[in-house]
View 1 (tube, rainbow, N blue to C red):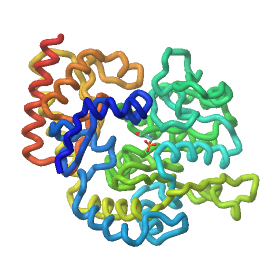
View 2 (view 1 turned 90 degrees about the vertical axis):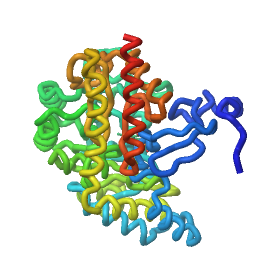
View 3 (view 1 turned 30 degrees about the horizontal axis):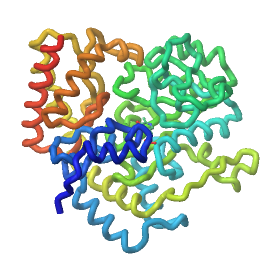
Amino acid sequence: MERMTSQAEWLDRAKAVLPGGGFGNFDPNVFIREGRGSRVWDEDGNEYVDYLIGSGPMLLGHGHPEVLEAVLEQLPRGQTFFANNALGVELAEDICAAMPCGEHLRYVSSGSEADMYAMRLARAFTGRDKIVKFEGGYHGMSAEAQMSLAPIKQVNFPQAIPDSAGIPQSVADEMLIAPFNDPDYIRSLLAEYEGQVAGIIVEPLQRIIPPEPGFLELLRTEADKYGIVLIFDEVVTGFRFAYGGAQELYGVTPDICTLGKVIGGGFPLAAIVGRTDIMAHFDKAQVGADGWLMQLGTLSGNPVAAIAGIKSLEILRRDGQYDRLRGLGNRVQDMIRSELDPTGIAYRIVGDPTLFEVVFTGSNPRSYRDVLAGDASLGKHWNDALRAHGVFKSPGKTYPSLALTEADMALTEAAIQAAAKAVVDAG
Ligand SMILES: Cc1ncc(COP(=O)(O)O)c(C=O)c1O
């Protein structure tokens, strides 16, 4: 049956019950009614090619028939048990086999939690307090992660600036903020704080900024030198950049990594994965009460998410999936280049073919501050025109999915042509 309520009416209703009229995630004016394959439809009936894909999880597209079939098989057998279940073990086996750092795994329900526990785990393992985080790096919503993600003012490194109200100064005092892709800074920071740093947490590709050659290798070497736990946040890159994530693509293995998004096939599931001696701190029997990191969660390892993850990973293991994903991303990037190059407008496509964004700048961004220096107003014209012409994406990222079809490519090309024109008209 057709639902007649429009987006404007839904927004009124949302404002009555939700702060800011939304869930906090995305433009609250948009209400997605349905997603199928590569497309989504809003409550006004507008259809889009989806490059948001649920902020990453729907790599196979919405409602992939094989994933749905697996989930529908599980549902009548129960949604969640809190107790161990075979599907959760099977998925853990698949993930540990896939990830170069994968020895043991602990489930949680969101990437935020996974990152929070990963940092705590580094502290439990080393007995030290300080965590190095990179400016602009996103690791969810814990107090530690909410340091210098999008700082309201630029201060000298390594001072941490909270992004959120409600975080005590004591948390900021234990965080050391560094610029991404700056080897000299990292070397001197770690030398200065020798014996105090528990962990380094990093997105191997920070938001959209690729690591410069040697940077991740340097983090590996320096972490080893000082006995620091190296944490790769692979919530985005895991099972997207390659089956074994960014650690496989870049050939640098962290001590632990965090995963989310793709591994739950669109259901709430995330994980901390890594070396057994570090992961042992989740097990009181191995480390004793003093070294133990208490961790539990109502939905952890729930069988519906687990079976969706198992099936998604099985599909991703099939021949050619990652070549195809990269191929699709490269095609979209080529479309952007062929429209923007002739305009003479300064821009860069920043990222990886599996995840990227157009930044209107004349130089290659190496760090958060470089991206910030891009022309945000041109970026807004670009994104608004894409949306108006049927491309649905976040303002900061373009996520190709494996569900994209030739018809989607044609629509994307037309939208990019319109967006390039909008940028020229605005410039
Ligand atoms: C790199 C990274 N880490 C952590 C998170 C947090 O994950 P979640 O939204 O599942 O809490 C995100 C979410 O987008 C992310 O991009």
